[in-house]
Length: 236
Image 1: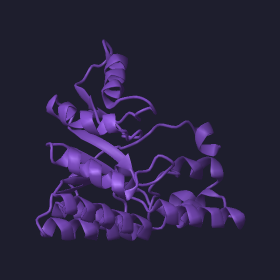
Image 2 (image 1 turned 90 degrees about the vertical axis):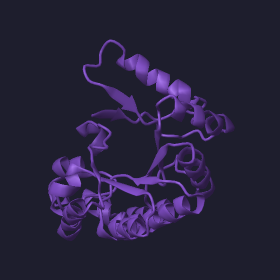
Image 3 (image 1 turned 120 degrees about the vertical axis):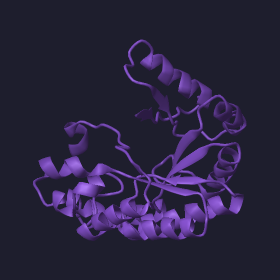
Image 4 (image 1 turned 120 degrees about the horizontal axis):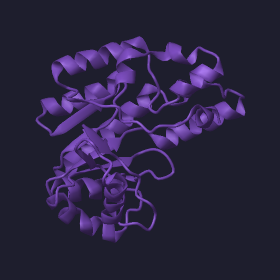
């Protein structure tokens, strides 16, 4: 199953984002596909067009709690409310961006810039905290939520606890979190750079927790959830 998640461009409506994907795939696709746009330009037009797009068959969207285009808590609350209560589902990348920004700047100032420091700058607790915050925000407006690319056991506990309370919380993880551990960063930079992903590759205890969560039904989706970058881009 292929579900593209195109980044909405600034100044572009979500309808235009979807139309762009459909045009790119026209007469080329050999499988059924859909798209789950990343909502970046959160204008009044975007909020108003969501109910109709969901009705037309585009029910899933994605936002990030990290990076320059992150949602703030107010935007996240509104998007969960509008999307969830119109029959859609919002996927959320959960990391505490402000804490990570501080950690990253501190490490750069100390000359700690090799790939092995990547997971240290984005420790598991930053994912756990953001996951809990997103879940509680969804609960506040009575909306379902999908926590994407879960990588660590603290976030899994937040998800399991919410599901045990009867909340509509779903979780995704990825193959790289299931088969790799942080030893991938203990290599020459030409190899280690390939594994600079967010969230980072975790230790074995988190990998084992993910397998257990799949068996328990806490994690209901395994997908690639990836953006493709060349090795030159990774090394940069």
